Image (cartoon, rainbow, N blue to C red; front, side):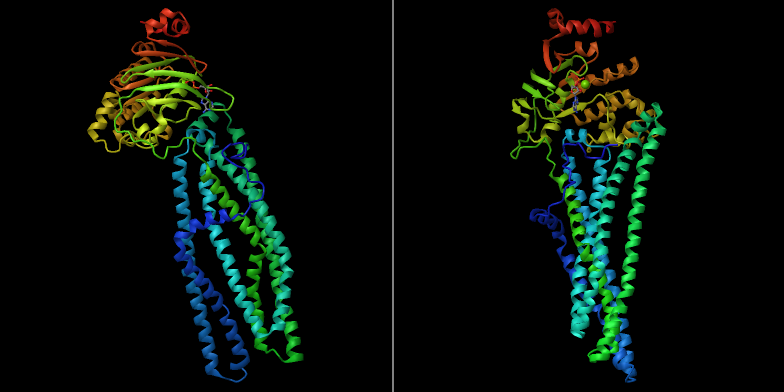
Length: 600
Ligand SMILES: Nc1ncnc2c1ncn2[C@@H]1O[C@H](COP(=O)(O)OP(=O)(O)O)[C@@H](O)[C@H]1O
Ligand SMILES: [Mg+2]
C-alpha cells in the first residue's frame, strides 16, 4: 500500500528535519493572536500556581521547626489551615486553567479546520483527481486535531516548567544554597535516560502516525458503495482483509511498543525519584550535624520541593523533541494551506449579469499531464442559442473540451471567450453560474431528492421545483416513491437508476436556468424507455440555450446546428449532418459504423 501523499505532486515530503524559521513561528503565532486575552490569563494562573505550590512546603517547615518544638498550638492550626486553603485554591485555579486551555485549543482547532475547509473548496479538480482517498480527512482530523496536544502538552508544559523550576529553585537557594546546589546536581542523573526515551518514543509515534494514515486510506477506499461493490464482484474480501490485518497488526505492534517504552521510562523516573530524597537526607543531614546552618524542617522542605523539579526537568529534556514535533505538525498543516489552486480568479475579475451565450475556442491546447497533449489547437465558435454536437471515438477529448468552459481546468494556451470576453477575465462565480452541466454519471449527495434539487437554486419554490421535474420527466417517478421528494438517494445516488439520476440532474440544471448547457450523453446503453424519457427531458433544457452536447445518439446529432468531430484531441471535421456526410471522411465512417443502425 502506498503511503498517502507520496508521489502526489501536491505534497512535499518532510522526512528531513523541520527548520524552525521565524516565518513559521510568526505563522503559528497568528492563529493564537485572537485568544491573547485568555492566554494572558493562563500565563498569570501558571505563574500563580507555581508560587502557591511552594507554600505548603514552607508551612511544613514552620510546623516542624517552630510550631511543634515550641508547642505553639495557634501557629500549628494557622499553618494547617493556610496549607489547606492554598491547596484548595490551587485546585480551583487549575480547574479554571484547564477550562481556559481547552477553550483556547479547541477554538484554534475550529479556526484552522474552518479555514482549511474553505481553502480546500477552492482547490481545483486536478487536486482532487490526485489526492489519495482519506488523505484529506486524515489531515483535517489527525493533523489539525493534534494541535490540541501541542497547546496543552507542549506550550503549557514548557511555561509551567519554566515557572515551577525558577520559583522552586529560588526558594531552595534562599533556604540553603549549599544543599540547593547539591540537589540540583542530582537532577542530571535522570536527564540522560529521559532524553533517550523521548527520542525513541517520538520515532515510534511518527511511524504509528504513518501506519494509522494507511489504515484510514484503506477504510475510506474500501468501505463505501463503489469500493465494496468492486471487492464483492472480484471476490477480493479475503485479500482486502489480509491487507487490512497487516496494517492493523503493525499499528498495534507500534502502539504497544510506544506504551512499553513509556512504562520503562516511568520506572526509571520512579527509581530516581526515590533515590533523590535519600541523597538530600544524606547531604542535608551532614550540613545540619556539622554546620548547623539547616533545620530539620528545612531538610523536609527540601525533600518535598526537590520533587517539584523532576517535572520541569523532564519537560526540558524533551523540549527539543516536543518543539520539533509541534513545528512538524504545523508545517504539515501549512503545506496544505500553501497549495495553490490551478484555477485562480483575476483580482479585477469582471462580474457579468447577463450573457447572450456565444462561445469561442481560439487555438486551445491542453494537457492533463506533461508531455501528453490531450487537446491540440482546438478552435470553434458556437453562436448564441445554437446547439453544437461533439462526436468522436472514446478518449478523443470531448469531455475535456467541455471541462474547459466552466474552467474546471484551464487551457495551457489559447483563449476561450464567452460573448467575446476571455473567460479568465470573468469572476468564477459569474462564469459558472451561467453554465449548467449534466455529466455522464450524475453525482448526488446522500440526502433527499429535494435537497439535491435545491442545491442548484436554494431559493426555488416548491412549484418551481415540481415544474422542473415535470419538464425533466422525473416528477411522476418521484411522486411514486413512498416518501416522494423527501426520499433519500443513498451514497452517490446509488438507490436510483442511471436514467433516473440523469433526469434528476437535468431537473437540477433546469432549476439553475443557465444560459449555456453542457450535456454529456450517457454512453452506457440505457433501455429504450429511459432513453426516450431522457431525450424528452433534454429537449426543453437545450431549447433557447447555447449548448455543447457530447452525442452518442443519432437523434441528438441530427438536431444539432453544428457538429464537431473530435479525434485524438483535434477537431478534424465540422459542419451539419448533411454537409459532413458529403465530405465522405471520418464522420461518414463513424455514421456508417455507429449511427446508421439507429435509424428506424
Ligand atoms: N484527470 C485526468 N488526468 C489525466 N488524463 C485524463 C484525465 N481525464 C481524462 N484524461 C485523458 O484524456 C483523454 C481525453 O479524455 P476525455 O476528454 O474524457 O475523452 P472523451 O470524452 O472524448 O471520451 C483520454 O486519453 C483520457 O485518458
Ligand atoms: Mg467523455
